[in-house]
Length: 381
Image 1 (spheres, rainbow, N blue to C red):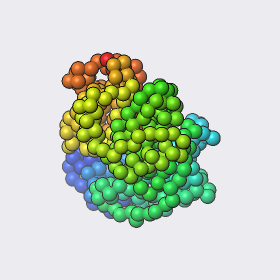
Image 2: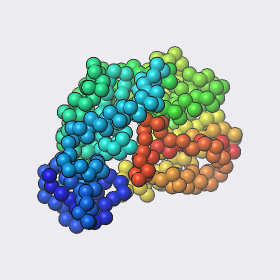
Image 3: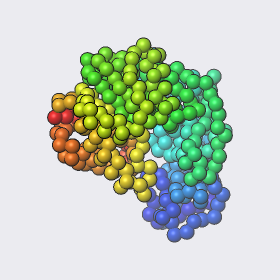
Image 4: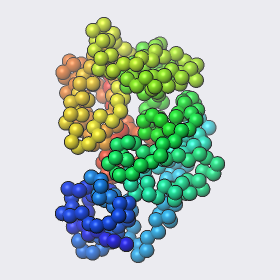
């Protein structure tokens, strides 16, 4: 096994190209043993000279002989045990995250469970190369389940691999007793945003008798929860026509009514402002706005513009839930965005709650980007 000597090992799992004086020779996807400046074992990493992340340190073990199959089995077993300890799955919830990247010691790999289906998503070439081993471990833990693999076009281009697309039947899953239709072969991530489960449940506790607007609603997660909880009216807005149709189907599955609108969020919010329309609860939950360090400043400007417009839609004394799933944006930076937007909009925001993803999305203390989901709840005056 080849070795990589790092004088200054990173705190997190990623060794970027800019951190290396030269790129060592090796095959893409190959496993390197990482040593520190004293020659002491530091861990093991996947090598990919084509990626901006040249090395992904996936293990800090210092064993003399390293067995990748044993490692995968132990990590996936530990992830499975954590979810079981959290009560997942349950009678009311059969959709949850099984593997959460670095939070479960598997940087570059996520996996979600949808009823009797497991969908894993690759973010690294290394785990793509181990897909057959991963499938065997998952099949052992979930006998009789369908197992699929996904990767975004962006990841495949950046990491240098190609995953054959697949078609799967739509699945009906249950989250906190609410029914959702999921397409494992289409849509964002692996087909559903299960990271907002706890936030959706809390939103439902506030929604009875309220008029609610869900901006960037995707397939209507927050919207359906609000309608099921007895909201006086729910408007769901998303630019993706397939997501809008999915929101309508999810509402029908739960025997509730929502007004699902296909529109650009900026255009729709400006129209509502011009019409002087306001709501008791405004939810702003855009997809990842900041995708790289290079577009961070541009993303911050977009967050400010979105929040400024959304704040205008909140009735005096109403509730504003604003979210960010950009891991490169810190909590303090997100709060500063809200401070700026409320000032420009001339609205006072009284924050009464901060929250994130559920316990099935653990993160490690030395990898701040793992705490990617940020949800801020405020009363607006």
